Image (tube, rainbow, N blue to C red):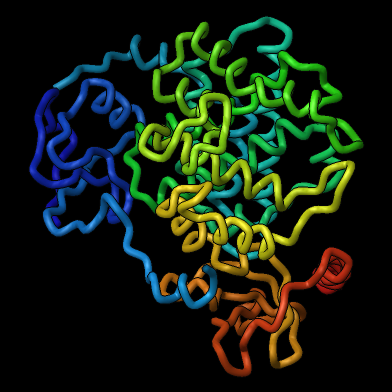
Length: 413
């Protein structure tokens, strides 16, 4: 792996190897030319060096099929130009700065939750602006998503443990759904080694994938009852409505397609065009998965949420039929079979919360044991296995609530 000074990069320059921001974050794929926009952004981020790796095995991740089958089926930027750069939401910046300064586990979790809530507020403002003014601040949106991608990359194991309250999901369903889906989408994009521009486009598309709902009566996405056939038919128009909105706003074509096609399915059973596998855009394949997974694992007024484990099982059952297999595998290896945030009962009689994945085996994630602390005072974590530390089952919603109460009581003592 070689280090390259950013100041030596020139527009239209390309390399036989991939250009990396760090050991896992791709800026450009092999053979792709350096653009003026990329150089400008690197300078704006104050990135001094990048990496060049001829041995990098990225582009497509490798997965353990055995595990799956066992369990389920030169640019000058002057000061004036810098001053014209889009400004990200001040509250988000302040929350990000606080999160970066936290080193202990509890403080980091709380700081990450604060950042998460600020992004929720921002997404709410995006939807509200369109609903009231009929437009978007595209530069600000892309700038904010850029920072969100970095935030998720650096705080993946914390942000995946956040589960918005039932009240939040009920009152602001579209916002909560957009936020949580976008987190999952970025995590999958990282696992699939998308470059930075692709991650931004994916994030923007995912934030806006339900924007067409604003053209429908609000009761259709805030209803407390199951929908009739006619109501479901109306809801099925939202991808086309969303596409028309984003097309009129002149968003990039990949973003437009991701919104139009996010309800298409690999087997052609989706809508609005009944597209099949090879005709569905890559971003739409990802948003299709995260949209479905998030919806399954979130409560609505008319039904309880499935556990994240049950939602994962359902997604795995439909890989390669309704959903793209590589995207499903990326979801699995990013969250594990027992997804990050789930409360689990172990064979040793202890209760824990899944806090990270095991990159070698999605069956045996890392678990934080409730009520136990390590030598440094942080919660004790263990790697589950097939023996005494085996996960026996996932706690149901009532048991999980009791576990949360116990955890808060312990933290207060």
